[in-house]
Image 1 (cartoon, helix red, strand yellow):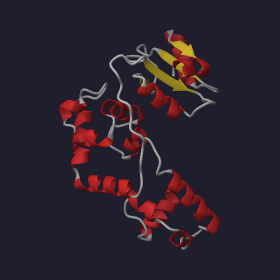
Image 2 (spheres, rainbow, N blue to C red; image 1 turned 90 degrees about the horizontal axis):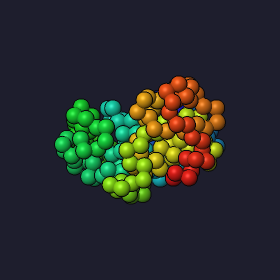
Image 3 (cartoon, rainbow, N blue to C red; image 1 turned 45 degrees about the horizontal axis):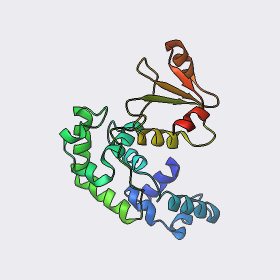
Image 4 (tube, helix red, strand yellow; image 1 turned 120 degrees about the vertical axis):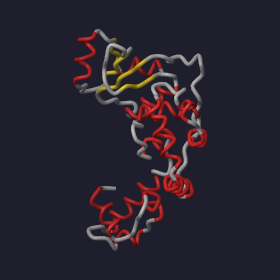
Length: 213
């Protein structure tokens, strides 16, 4: 969904919240400006496919302040499912790696708002689902290791790689630092590779990553 089309649907009163997207039908879409039957079919297919997601992606998409993809993955693997996260207090949330008082407070405040809970309930009622996440074991093979991904991977998306690394206990950071253990360099890597080489951080390719996973 492009921002212009979403804006058009909001202006037309077709959707009020993100959950309303899953109630759209073909007749409603083709009635909108510049939406033909083929475009409507493609859009409905994409919407239907998006019902099947993962818990980290769902958490990230909620737009909780300061919850990026990495932190969403950490929450998912620590708690295993959505309900324990919703019910968690600030102290329990701070047991998750890299979550401090401010982020914990943001999470609690987000789920305390009735509107947010209503939208989540509506999304689940619309068929949004995800597989249960295996909680990270104390002896997880990559526990305590920090990875940074750069470039394009051929065998999986970077999102999938991130989720699989986190499931094995790793932290996936967005930038390279002296605390980084591994930089995974795919095709056409960016400046992160240069920084890793300057700092002496170990660089591995996709084949080496696959073996770790």
